[in-house]
Length: 307
Image (cartoon, rainbow, N blue to C red):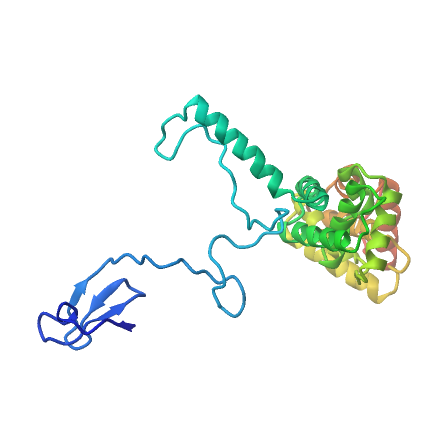
């Protein structure tokens, strides 16, 4: 609480004690008798907001965001044809505002790199939406693309390919990997080009992506197949037993995940067909059937038959 100036109007009307202002509750009160001299006061000071860890309140406004090429620090220009009072803007004034808006847009993209990043951001967000990739991972992909731009890795390469590779790399780094074939199909980038650009990002930016494990794909497959948690838990235990016996080495993680979900769905009484699992996972029915046979045989899952 902050003390007010000790003037006559700042003293309590009951006991004469100097009033103090409680900024947290927007009140002016007497610290001795508790009289509330005024309440619901308006703070006309700046709305300082701290978005960093030290609570320093370095600026006001919305937080920075990776989803805009300028981090959202610029002021947007409204495209409405009405003013703040809801009245229609005259035609002459509307033309002037259109010209100002055009100049504002040109000044926002000061360099070709700004336009490049803006295009890549839109592309990454579209691919992330198609693959249901969480927003934090998409933002990490945008950060990787910005780093690639600063390192001059985009020159001579396709913007779409590098953007897709950045999103793929972000999914690998975050432990939420996606199948390269699935990423290539959603982005429209050739699989070999996607992986080649990803290798460029890994080598030049010194990234350390973790190798995907079959269990990383279980949650998404169970969700897409509308399976209860008990099926995912059974598939997870099945893969843990398979790891202990060393039968997952050299096998595709997506193939193992799809086969484990398939076997677990039948074992737990929520069967899904091989065709349905194949459509969701992007793994062929033949691979699912072969990996499922191996799991059933080596884990001794009696009573389970495969067509």
